[in-house]
Image (cartoon, rainbow, N blue to C red; front, side, top):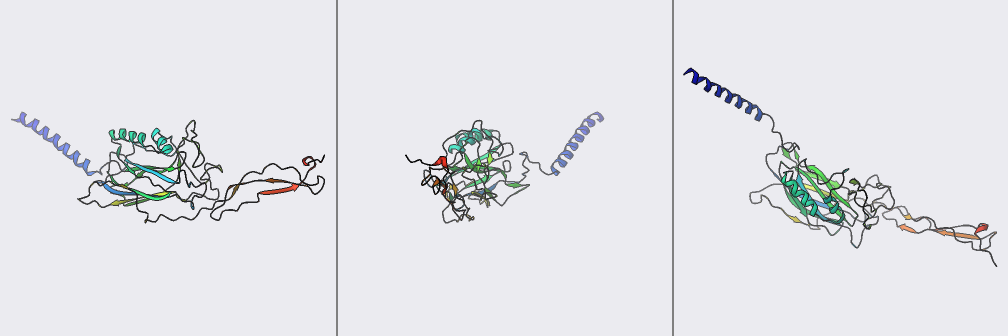
Length: 333
């Protein structure tokens, strides 16, 4: 009898040790498996509203009025964890990002997201309709789960060489709680795959491709750049997003929509951006008119490249005259 009791006691001892370990393991805070720190108990429903602020008052330089006028492509967004990046400032653009930033095609981006979903690093892809004007709204509803609490999105600027706005890995979860509301002002980015300076530049591939960079009022530092406003410390927001958590009801568990909001919603107001006059270089001096020794004059001209707007600096004189010099005279026969 004694020999049969010992194995039973040993088994009970091992079971007791296991139960103690499990007790202390579950007594510690739950550690997320996605590396984002999100320990929320369930999913969260959000509505994402994208608003374009691209107006001729805020961005008067070379503002596209036709063929095509200023507008926004469809918005493409993905919920994901830290093991996936839709795009990243300072890194090279993926084939999907290049295709979307240059021509607005989403096929490659969707393929990459589909592969990432197999690895469970991407949750759901979302899209909204494009906006046919520089100022407008579009929205979509999203269901975000704790495993993939990060949100990345892109919207192409039309027309543009390879410019877009977006957010990279915005975390909608703080610890064990979902954020109730998030608003982000958006600035333009250059995908680094096309070297055009203006909205309507012809296709000019960058070779080799450069990294994704933010476009500022002075970068690229070239007067031909459509966003070159040397008087501004920073550009006004060209767009913004607002993400608001929705209360989920039993009859509306996974509603997903995709629509343009009515124009009755007023866009955010920004002060008008002053646009200074830009003129060409002076032409060469013309030949002398009048007496060559005294009283003769010569002329040179320049022309307006960009007219001022929104109380910008006025244009300087476009014609200048000077006294003749002997080698510039027209000799009479």
